[in-house]
Length: 623
Image (cartoon, rainbow, N blue to C red; front, side):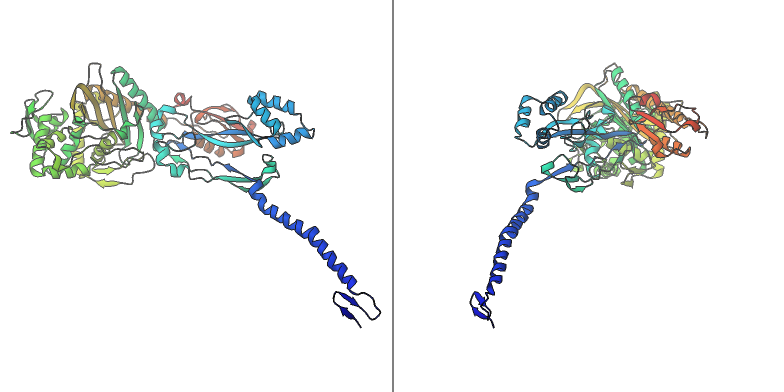
């Protein structure tokens, strides 16, 4: 029988049964303090450890590349490297005798020009991490030689063709933010990638192996293919700069559009900014195709209409304003009036428009052609030009607008409007990427073809004879506009010389606008300055297309073909057709193929690997 005396329990023999219980109790208390409390403390430290010891690396995504219509890279990224020193790890390796601190510091001094202040920091261990270099393009050391160094890879934007396309492509800031051009308007696409993340134990910060806590792969931005043709862009630049130099002009601009699609194939301005979309001017006689289109659409003119020109006309008899011509044309029919850019005939036509349509009717048609509003081209900074509302018109504005005065149009606006005539009456919005989203009928097919016929006569028999070519039929309209300062009037002796046209005449493929700003070499009429430039560009384009169509790569199953001048895409297709795997083809550089190993005509049975060398600098030589 047990006797319970509280804590002490005795059996009938007097043995203390509580002794075992007390021993167990004391043992449990010992376990609690010896194991459970330290364990709880350890758990507390572990919970805190990520906040204290966890580090993070952000792996930058690559911004998307930008290519021309033929797949040539015109904006891309190159890898650059930031080099870091893990001071803790260096001191650990030198303290345990694996490395000599003095020797390692000397290596760092020679390679990275480490100054004495950094040496002091390293020796004293005041900072865990030191940035040795940022943005280097090549690494000239190995991880085995410098185990305490770590490298972070990032990307820097590069533009291989520089000024040739900079006004279109734009640029980014040093940290990758879009500033202008396509880089800005398509930033959402180009920067659509997501960052990668490396989380690591900061106690072994740059000894990544074994120290990674979490890793998330990056995804890069989307690539972009422009409608721009780099070959045409180069032709435009060369011919425009030649004319500006020969005519001692202030500058100039050219834009080429695919007539049926609105795709912009070339766009270049000699100024430091894109004047094609961000500036406006008075179009002068290049406005006459629009005037004649509105009149014809409303049955106000006919091919056999006759006019008399004595060199001057008052649009409104009781308003003392006279519009003058360059000469007295005498009696002439409508096609000749257009071909010789007769202001008097155009004002007479404008009178008919004003009588039948009124200023509001004329304004409505001008708006349908896109004047006074942005075209919607996919470039930032486009302006709307200047088109006064009808209630702001003076009594003679209908006549001045008809001959291209009193209206301000951007170059991209004007080519879009005239191209609606070229495209059988359908206006298509200009696009640098993809196809036009905006299409609308402005005039009938019959009206468009009537005016196109008049534009052909300008080149064969009128003011645009110097645009005529034996290679292809060109149609167009000359323009000579006196420069004006808003609010001050016209500037004596300062002109825009211009020509807008299309080719081939029977089946238009391209529409082009050329403008020369302030020619000062004795000529300033559009037919004398701009028309020859238009012809030279067209003839180079035609010759280039014929040359490209005649460029046949002969491929035989037993010998290496000549791949020079091809893009990577075309070369890979040929080589893979010959049986080469992708891992047997090595590509060096960017651009077009300028050299290959093995050389052309090498027996294929002896070829185990193909190396293709690409270049931008040699691009012009392989066009």
